[in-house]
Image (tube, rainbow, N blue to C red; front, side, top):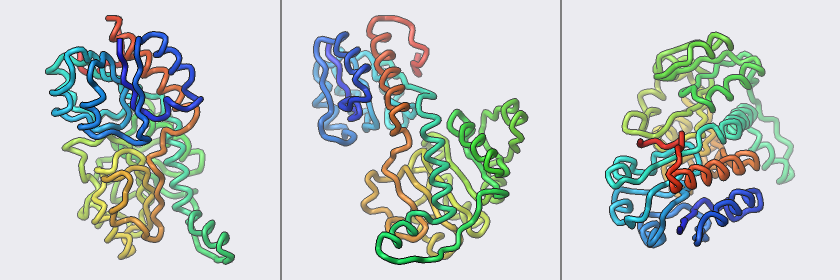
Length: 318
């Protein structure tokens, strides 16, 4: 049995238990030593003779699947998102795709909240100024009494909602599968997407990237937002038209952005790079010891279960 593991955190001590478990199960384990997500050509080369693939945020295209060996039976995603995996291609080739839902929901929600606080008080700019010997007086805003619109109220959105409510924010949400019971319990208002975007002081995105959600935050919707609204994105970069957002920051229509996900990663050519009141983090939402450990253990368990022919409740394609 040969296993390919590409999330680089598997080489860190925090995942020692999951690493030991998969190494005890497999005859051979191959790790990603590039330090970054793999492109399709790299994946094709490393998949030779592989039975199970524990995948990070690699680009697993239809071409990569077409050239995968017949031995490959499972792709176990280390994380909840699967937008970089061509699931129909996997299904056609008999490859099961699993993920690890819920394991990083607290970590991502806390980073989203941290980005919101940093944007509200412009903390990165204050830090840099003081470090450079300055003593500025930038005027920020309080989160108390502000409206937060959450786009996508799954596990992450719910965790963000409860934290925002504790800060005295007025929370509304949009989700095609809206949880009425949770919303009623916590006093969250259900709104259509366009109404939510137009009425919120802060907007946080927690939806997968798909044909329907790509550029859901575009020039038209940004123009309809409150002047000075702040957008937080810890989901996927393609949700926001970065050029439209950059123009809106420069004009003052947007009060700022807190971004952990980008169209291009790293965002070397992003039009948002270097703009004031725009905060970047390196797709680090799930990078807490607790989340890394949980994702690693579940990804390994999913992979082993499928290869042993056992039931795996987290398989997404049958």
